[in-house]
Amino acid sequence: MPADDSRPPLPRRGPAPAVERMDNAELARMVEAEHPYRGKALFELSDRIAHDDDAATKVAMLSRLTSLRQARLFDRVSLAWSAIIALLAAETPHSRAAAYEAFGALDVAEQRDMLDYLEVTAIEDAHPRIG
Image 1 (cartoon, one colour):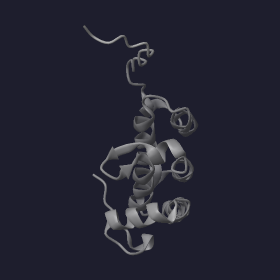
Image 2 (image 1 turned 180 degrees about the vertical axis):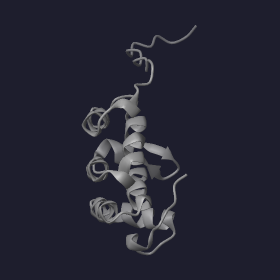
Image 3 (image 1 turned 30 degrees about the horizontal axis):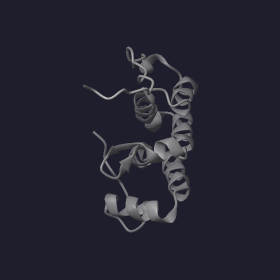
């Protein structure tokens, strides 16, 4: 006989929102609110970075959220790291500067870990490619 589980059931995700039709502010609010599709919203914002400085600024800001620093995509890579990597990969002056600031907001141990993951000794040497 199964044990009595008095925990409330997890909320259902429901259909994915049409993030491609949302503006940057709406996407950022989804991430900040820890919406079940916050990763999808963050990735949509990240896709805009190369052509939209506002998106880059929002992604850098969002990378500082504790919830994104704790949410793992795989292995050591968090949603916050993915945001910083997207900023680096866009290779615009604004996105690179935003990436350096976001990286600087990480604690020293996390910075070391991320540099190790990116296989560089300084964040300025990181030139990841996405896609």
